[in-house]
Structures are given as structure tokens and as C-alpha cells.
Length: 116
Image (cartoon, rainbow, N blue to C red; front, side, top):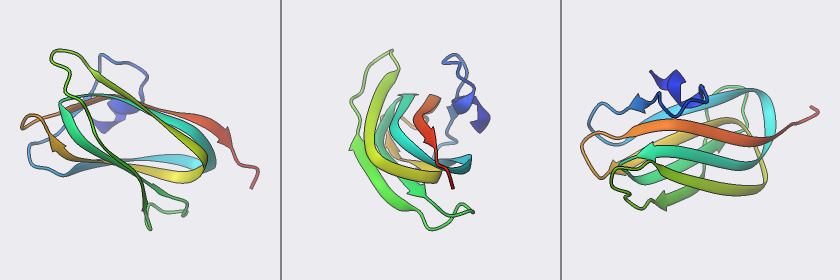
């Protein structure tokens, strides 16, 4: 299940169902200031990260799109520094993979809650 990406355990994961693109959304209780996002995944070729500052998960804006390196037999670990970055929701879109199925093991966001 998608909850596995946020449980802090790299042994659990969310896997795609085949076709691309695939996506999942992570929501915060309120708007937060994020300094860095990190992801551990396997067989992901192209990843896009979008953000929304709305109360609902709508109005997403693209922040990052990157082609990841294939690491045979190892998790891909990517970090994205995000200076002066605010979000209520983050949408992760897997646009393509190195295989028919890919997995996301962990997503981490570092930052602080806004005083709004």
C-alpha cells in the first residue's frame, strides 16, 4: 500500500501496477516549509515532483523532474534540496521505469511547520 512510503522502513514499499505514469500524493496537516525531499526507490527512470499550497490536493505546480540512474540490485537514493519551498501536498509522479514495475520504499521531507 502507498502508506509504506512514509512508514520510515526501507523494507516495506509501494509498487506500481504496470502502466506509466503512476503517482501518489503526500499531504501535510498544514502548509510546511520544506528544505529537502529524499526518495528511495527501485527501477524508477523518470520522476517528477509537484507541490500544492492549497487546502485540498489541487493546483499542483511542477518543482523537479529528473532522470534517475539505474542501480542494479540496489535502491536508488535521490535527494532534492528545495530552498524557500512551501507545500501542503507533494505529488510524486513516476513517468517511466527501467522495468514494467517499480517500487518506492521511502519518502522523506525535511523542514518546519509554518506559523500560519
